[in-house]
Length: 629
Image (cartoon, rainbow, N blue to C red; front, side):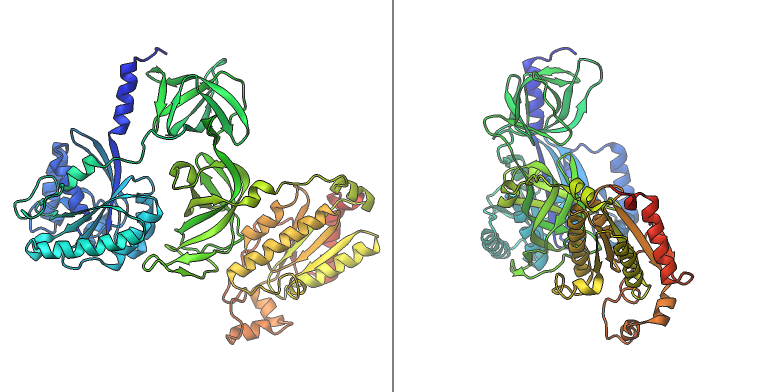
């Protein structure tokens, strides 16, 4: 690779600094897409084929009677064109002589709030549109609150469609005053109000003769003048995304500078960890650089032989990054399925993907009023504050300090689909002070004393399938052999440990989470643990399995069809559920997810309880649990 000149490095830095990412938001049909379309059109960077397509689309599907419908440059989804609304987040690029822009056009409908959050996640400024005829609406306030929550501080209020109120100065000033008052109350202090008509181009890229009373900037002038917060300020932070070893003798760390400047010769500290090293080279396809600034993707080589992995952060040694495993965070839930406290999710934070669990929310935020409301779970588009726990220590900074290291995506563990987004407020003190205490007498010592290997035998199935009866017979036989056992039964634990839990999905998840933890402790004590629970969700049974070592968990599906157990109904529960006296009853109005690959499947329509118990004992003998430690 050939070294680049200092002038080339300066060019790259300038190239990034002159880019602004912003979003447009507001209520339905306030003219967001039309505004962006006009910006694209008047930037004079649209290819001729795009212009031709715009003219044809305007005649065929436009809403302007054959005139150019600028919204069609942005609204790409068929459903949007048919309804005249924006559903997805549409990203567009345009440029002026002073700056390049990346704009996200976000939907206005309340049910698409998650899309608006997506558009705001990387934005540095926002244009909030509203219709001059309707003024400040609930959705206007909702989006403004989300902007404040997401840390966007540069906001322009475009009072649009002013032509439909005769370009009234009094209407504009009344709306501007209302919005400024509201914005100040939620921490949005940098607000510029601009009277516009996106359809006619008034005050969009050029001053309008129709508003001689307005002396502020045009919308484009404001966008060109916005100064994002310290684009290259603050201590250096480099996020490692890939360990790059294309050939022997070359070991580099490819990633992105997410804050500050990284220079050759800088001392950096690797986080997590406490190892320091010196930056030896900053490598690009165009040659080495003396420094890399925020937003630049590059490869860093260190002079010292240290252990660095994907997801690690190289931070200025004099101002290192903190690490933790537990945080208070704001969560925006995006999934159709509600967030269940205690359920295991995944969190993608930076370049790391780690296990995540969420506690019961401290409160839910009413984005219309700002009030704090009680919540047990989170539904789609709801925002809450909750404590979250990761299974691995990660490098972080609070979201308001550095969004790249303070935000994370929540993924469903089974399907890997995006379930939510989080913004770190601060680390919980206990994550830094609570450490695992080593002990002298461990599980192996207890197992040797007991004369058998410990394990969890987890019986799952519908109510009335025979789980408790079979588990009791298995324990009776093991006890007669002198084995050390304990039976955890679903009904029994609800008299004590879990007496505070009901039967909602959230309570069922917490019920199994607690039992899984107790069972894991008992395995550590060297016991054979028999757990008899409906445990309807695969994800929670997987959680229980993951708490013990491989080979220490045996899932037993006590398999009896619904019509069979309902016919037996030993406790009369199915009859009560059918009469509507029991809500959230598994198999009736709450789902049961049968195991896909259990270690044992017991068909209790064909087996007696004694035969089923013998199959479990045979399995324990085959796997060596009963042959000693």
